[in-house]
Image 1 (spheres, rainbow, N blue to C red):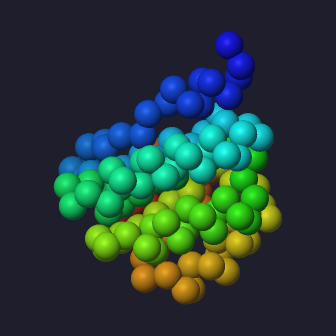
Image 2 (cartoon, rainbow, N blue to C red):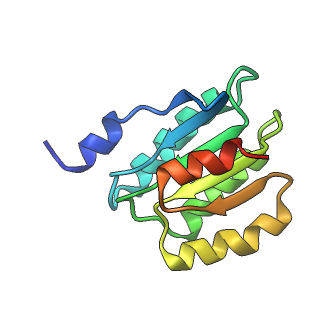
Image 3 (cartoon, rainbow, N blue to C red):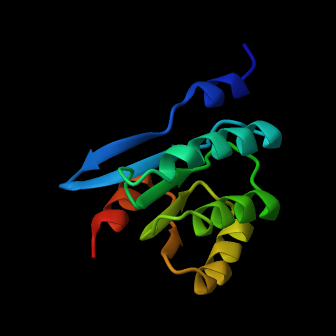
Length: 128
């Protein structure tokens, strides 16, 4: 089994957390397989766009090679949804990619940040 196959098998899901609902978008452990990451995200975007899916999103990218193209694809995917997204937190980005999110968040209608600890990221999503 190739190491990226573990990432492909990870399913994104809705999670009840401290009285709130969070969508956990698992795009981690895909390493340098950018096309697979894009495909997985596009498939998951159909679920994220459903009215019943939470508008609080945790995007986990640990152990995936993420560049500006991938991040822009993800952010634009959220911007293009017909439903309103409230908060997005990115987990597992490099310092360069965190800087991009910091600059990019001024041009979105939803709050975005980067937090390396998934538990702290979930806390940020459900606090006001």
